[in-house]
Length: 427
Ligand code: GLC
Image (tube, rainbow, N blue to C red; front, side, top):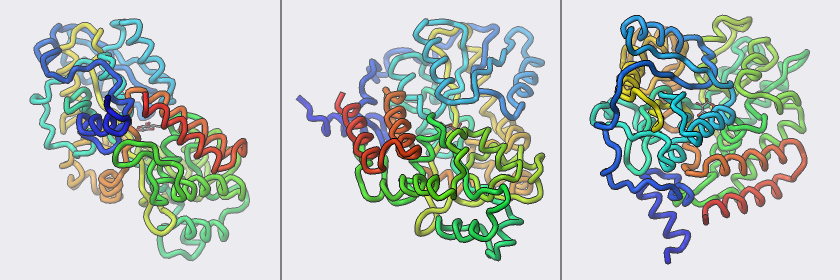
């Protein structure tokens, strides 16, 4: 019988990723390549595109442009809630009911393993996507056991949004590279309704992201190279304590415990924060806000120098239970084309997955931080790959939240998290 570690290693090799919990091997995919293939993506006609709220408003425009060209293959955009966990829940329910209501799923990068292993999504014909043109980490997020299940569409990495006017007022020569530099700037300018640092600290996927970033920035890892949980370490404690002490000292405002992406964005745009950890999508929206001429973007700071962002993003998959899968495949190719990715970035500042766009003169001109974004994306750390990702993220969120709200000490929260993740590893 294979030991848990051996089993884990086997899964790591099979999954081809650094961080694969043994749980990633729990699904029913034979990986033999003999089941559903490109030939099974048949049928043409109306389809749906299902995703979280279209915050930028640009997805509807892309859908409208497609519909104008495809009168018999119309796409309807179905918007789910803003919050990642609620989106996942609705997509899982749709799959468990084997409903054909959802066709193209805009899958968060952390859900690929679960949806692929449960055969809720159909494998994509890898040879019909020019994968070498995409940023390599984004391709890996759409694969499970070496097979493409979701086409890379929009990628994401945590960035530090900062108020240029306040950083200058504090006498700093540029954005902070360390957590201490951030505090020093705030000591001088964070007053009169302006708090220092915000992020996403509500108990949901965003907290898993922010916790992971703090741990990785402090030199720790949520799971080690073999995919085993690794949060009972001094580095993980240093990362978590950065956030815990942040709340205790007021460096992070109390109300940030309720922030998801949009609450955090609104706080920054109202002028209530000097610094905010946020995704690329905010850039374009903030250029239309009260802080439009007073903000910029830098790499996330860490304790001793630049920090380690978490890799996020969304890929496009086809529900196994959908009709008109041939139309769905064409629609995915359309959305992931260079023309559409480029137009989407111009309109929304969401990060494209095609590497060449990071060298595009017009995009660089419109988004001067494009170099910082690419650098952050390439060094970003993935979250654990797990078929039971919902349970994995719950163990992280609940314990991190308990530490941030003072219900548990950091030591207790990390010990409990380690034990819960360990159980998931062994199943
Ligand atoms: C963003 C990221 C996604 C992440 C989510 C957390 O949408 O792209 O990967 O899970 O934020 O809130």
